[in-house]
Amino acid sequence: MTKDEAFTHQEIFTTKRLRLRPLKMADAEGFFGIKSDPEVTIPYGQDPHLSLAETEAWVQRCIVGYERYQSIAWALTLKDEDIVIGFCCYWHFDPNFICGEIGFELGKPYWRKGIMSEALLPVIGYGFRELELHRIEACPLASNTASRNLLLKLSFSYEGNLRQRDLFRGRFEDQAYYGLLKGEWPASV
Image 1 (cartoon, rainbow, N blue to C red):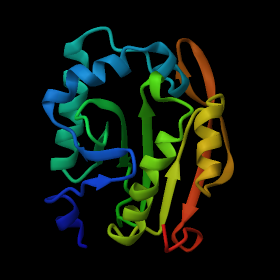
Image 2 (image 1 turned 180 degrees about the horizontal axis):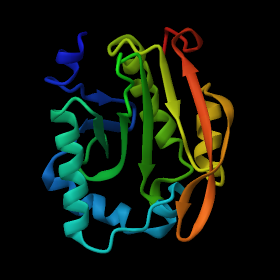
Image 3 (image 1 turned 180 degrees about the vertical axis):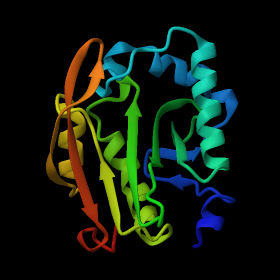
Image 4 (image 1 turned 45 degrees about the vertical axis):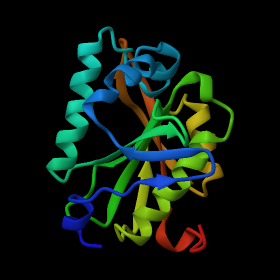
């Protein structure tokens, strides 16, 4: 698949419990329920959204990012319900389009149920097989234990910390770096 193809026809994934599809403006209300929850947003260094308009602007930025070949984002829904429960994306592609960063978030009612690992399996496979990435990165705050554990479960390697890399709420936070190479990902996944 060429880069142009990836950014003109976005893949939809279906797993045992989930459907991953492109974001749409109508998702803003569902995302607001997630992005307004400080227990969801603070672990990745973002203040919760205070208004639906703020979330609408975020959804719009995601849609525009796709149109500009900057990011590919999926809304996570339960397989049989079109209600947003989370999000995952590729962004921060390098200029040669051989490396990209993966990001994700999930509404609190769905934590600790294996949902995000289920969602990321096809997204990672797509990154290596279809986007032909050589490397996928993830950069959670070092204090975000849940995301760090998920990345290790998905075969990412911990590559180090950037000390006091992010400023959040007047405090500097370390950022952890994880990487996964194409040759480390099982072809069967």
